[in-house]
Image (tube, rainbow, N blue to C red; front, side, top):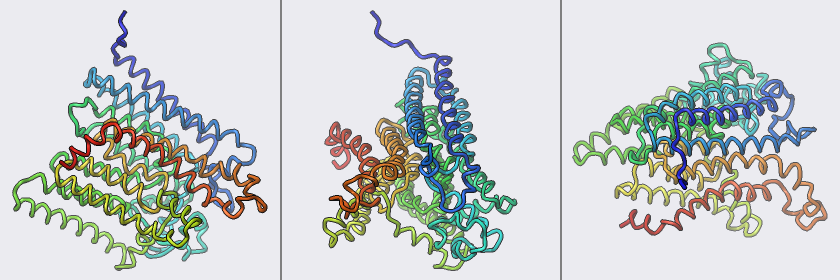
Length: 511
């Protein structure tokens, strides 16, 4: 009896891709029908979120939403696994499926242009800043939205109304383009920002599917598998396009820089990575690792000096030059500096919240020391790269993962930062780290928005006379709970990997 599965065919694989891709798009349509941008964006008063929209008679839909999300993650995993198997069997035929996957990604993004940003209204802040700059001449890097109280959309700035923009000149110039073309209404402005995000998704997808080189050429991971990993990830579509976060433009520039580096174009790669940091500052973590990789590619010290000097000149000229165009120093860096003080839903912040109740005297040190731990981990990564134990893609992934774990603030869309390094070096470790982290992050909306408001805050033990009353507020209860859910599964996946081959890996790394 033959127990070997029948060989895959291009026709059967294409049908399966369309079947799951069609279901994924239909689920996005369902989400948009439940949370349409219009009319909810015109709601007066407090900005809405997923729970606020559902609380009056629509509570049942949250379970349908979660079921749909689960099906999307399952379908994406199933298709990527099948694409990898087919690539191992017939890489050339598998590559012909890239257009199909790109089409599914474009269709998903087009549908999500109509979604109300159900977990964060940052995209509306982009519109407010661009509008104020265009209509009133208020530079977002030096002037907060509250300086223009008569603007009808300032209320959409929310907590950022009193703060200057934490984003870089490249983002603010890009966001200004629709406003300069006359797109200043809040609805059309949000759609315009989402179109920018969709273009970044499509550009990054093309780079991954057609131009990237997988680090392990012998693994049979082709562009089609990496492309499926990217466009079929619900977090990518929901956070990048559905919620319109500008992080997708940052990681698109990072992807471009890494691919240019793969082709030996280190000067242009430096320029692209600098542009990434001028969208959002977290991309800066890549540049020292990139610079190290470039100078290590040659054994000539004179060539190393030339490359190092060239990269420094490109970075400083572009980075400081564009900031100088935006306004006087140091005022243009105010928003960036303010962003370092943010605290939210990170392991460090959850530890701080717990320690504040148990040992308030030491709790402040937790947040300050988390940065020291990050610096120590980053130093180890640099040393491993210097010893040629880590490639640039491996070092970049590890450093970005460390930054996500160890900084004082975390947001759902930060997982996007991992994807350039995972997509260009797709293996079981990078795939599962990114995929499980994406899944736990998207499913965390239950604790972010639903569990506390619909259930826990009404629990008898937490009421005024209850035994837990002194501790019963959202951040004390839900911060540790949400962080535990969001970070524990990815951490356990890593731990299982270390238990399996950690000793061998450490020996290879340091011996």
